[in-house]
Amino acid sequence: MTWNSGLAGDWVRYRSAAGRLVLLATVLGSGLVTLDATVVNVALPAIAAELGADFTSLQWTVNAYTLTQAALLLLGGVLGDRYGRRRVFVLGILWFAAASVLCGAAPNARALIATRALQGVGAALLTPASLAIIEATFHPDDRSAAIGAWSGLGGVMTAMGPFVGGYLTAAVTWRLIFLVNLPFAVLAAWAALRHVPESRDVNAPPRLDYSGAALSALGLAGVVYALTAAPTHGWGSGAVLAAGLGGIGALVALAVIERAQRHPLVPLDLFQSRQFTAANVITFVVYGALGGALFLLPIQLQRVVGLSALQSGTALIPMTILMLLLSSAAGRLAARVGPRLPMTLGPLIAAVGLALLVRVAPGGGYLTTTFPAVVVFGLGLSVTVAPLTWTALRAAGPAHAGVASAINNVVARAAAAVAVATLPVAAGIAGPAALEPDVFAEGFRRAMWIAAALVAAGGMLGFGTIRPGTAGGADPLGERLPAAGQSSCPLDAPPRRLFGEPARHGRASGGEARDGSS
Image: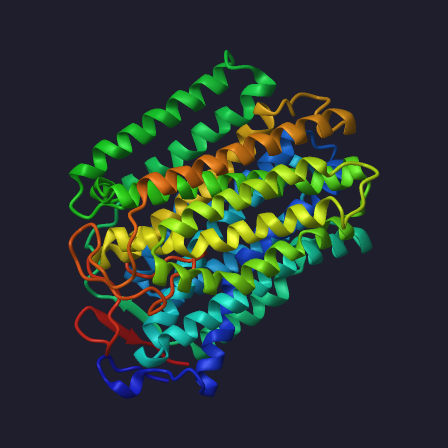
């Protein structure tokens, strides 16, 4: 099919067969990323047993994926705008699938960590392109419905992760949690090549900010490596010092260089907005606690409580179901009463849930220990996440909505990586005996108290920094914004625009070109 830019007939309608096929491709592609973000944690004890991995190796099994995705997410969106969203989307799918095969065949922990990092590269390519395809393809009147379906169906993939990971690990082998990606990847790539039109931004910057991408990647990797390796090798280790100081130096250089760039990958002027900065600090705290808790809880359930991989995976499902059911309602609540209330109460409720997790121990029944904690934690996250994302976008203003969402994504993923590296250390889970049940159980309780305190502090920060107000009012930059709920920006994928103007909600014209054949 040939797409001619600027013709109303070019748009795909939501209820058409073509629209369903575009959704199939984008949901399956982004679903690979969300599935793999949750499926691995449940399998960590089995990975440790088969590969002889220590606790630090398990940390890197999670963080290698998170770090490369966070470091390259902004660049992935820019590449899609410049070279074609479908092309980069399919490249990301194929890259992700190939890395998944390598993960499933990993002979040792080092190989698994390296191939998980490769998976993160594929995720960084396909994640921003997924939502960008929807925005560039669907009729403006159908865009919000399409994005809502994309978000909801992607959430189902997220919900499947712990259960699928637990079942495959218990019934066959943990290696299948990576190989199960292949049929989804094949179907997604076929649907994209056959039914998704190509689109690109002809007004994209003439020169990509590769220096910004490189410095952000080196900075994140260096700091997180130092935080993860220091408990084992000591802060006086040459490798730890080099990585830590090098990472800090790279982040400082990033701040200096980005100010001089005409088209920076990270527009630092956004952080002059108190609301934008506060929203991202709260994002860092909340998603850090989420990442740390979801890393430690499956190990506690299996190594200490004695549950199987399948049982521990099933134990986490109520939290995800609550987020799927309540997130939209929380967004509507923020539209009516303003974001301050949900961004204060949500983290406080989540903190209570984390505190309740200290009761997860041998001899305690699931319904009296784990279930209440998971439900309360999920309720708190449900109240928090949608208003948090909306506040970050609202503070940035419509001209920077794409890059604001992308930065918020990077902050969330970086927070999870830092939490996985530092929370266990702060709680005393480190060294050769870290996975011993008694040692881990004591550290787990301390970790949950620490996480609860941090999230509660995030709630108080929300009360003290987020302005009261409702949708449709003036944003901190003085621009009139649409009501919350008129557009959707799921945290898992930033919109396509990382520079300049926001996505047009009208006919493709000027800077938008759509072409392709199948």
